[in-house]
Image (cartoon, rainbow, N blue to C red; front, top):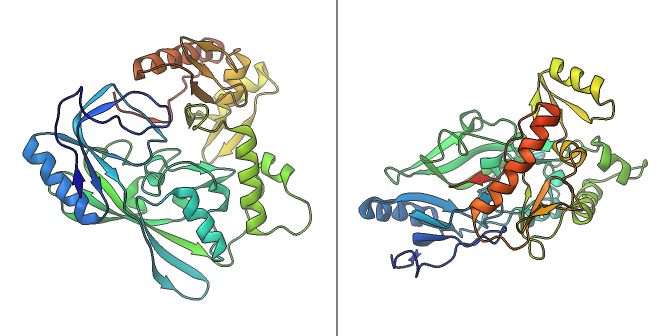
Amino acid sequence: MSSAAENGQNDAPYLKNTLQLRSQAARVATASSTEDISRATRIATDAGLALVPLGEGSNVVLPEYLNALVVAIKSMGIKLLKDDGRRVRVRVAAGENWHTFVRWSVDNGLYGLENLALIPGTVGAAPVQNIGAYGVEVCDRVVGVEVVSMASGEVAYLDNQACGFAYRTSIFKDIARREWIIASVDFQLDREALIQRDYPTLAERLPATVVTHRDVMEAVISLRGERLPDPEREPNAGSFFKNPLVSSEVAEALVKRYPDVPVFNQGDATKLSAGWMIERCGWRGREIGGVGMSQRHALVLINHTAQTAAEVLDFAQHVQRDVFNEFGIQLGIEPDVLV
């Protein structure tokens, strides 16, 4: 494990993040293994600092200064745990790139994650957000996670149920965000998995004839590439607002007022399209103070020239206010806001 010296705010390195906000930490340590993460917890305890894990910074809003030890997770590796000829369980290090892992799984005939292709970030970040796309959520394939206690540095294992998965969240984003650091994730993949092609935009892209899992992955890559801006060219954190979940009564009332509002069944709740509401309020392509919503996708916030989280969150509040005033719906922010 390498560690940057605690040099003070002005001299500390800037933290990697796809919104390209200028953010520094009191100290930064690079962890290439579970043991490195455990050592980082002891360093933080000795220094009296909080711990903040960081992968590729693709789903966070970082403050100008974090009085914390940031653990840059760089661990790599995919390990076969179990194979019964049909189902395969693999353990993937938290630092592995998510999309690279999805491609690896399809290349090896192990299916179930292809709808989640091209989502930016690391494997370790995927359970935190319970990432999802085109009708699939990662919790459907997570068996459990290997974690390191921030308090003691001890290694533990949490099964799927203990992760508290829900729509775009888990215990790691809420009650346990200051308790555990994810070191690796166990997935169950399937050589005979059903092809998930029912999501409307995905179904339109795929042919009506025989479709393979690779076809689905390539279609998802194509769709995301067309609709979502590249963070390298237009700094963003992907979908900035969550699609709200409401009761059937609220959804029915909205449909009466707005017959064209997209609604989706989500278990006991109804999911509304945040992007549709944002566009309806006139925010698609609109910019204020160096921050704006993408012209390509109304759900993606673009940082044009802003330097700080405060500027980004101030813009987000304008969008939230207008959506609430028009629809009575409070939009939640999807990235992890560390301010």
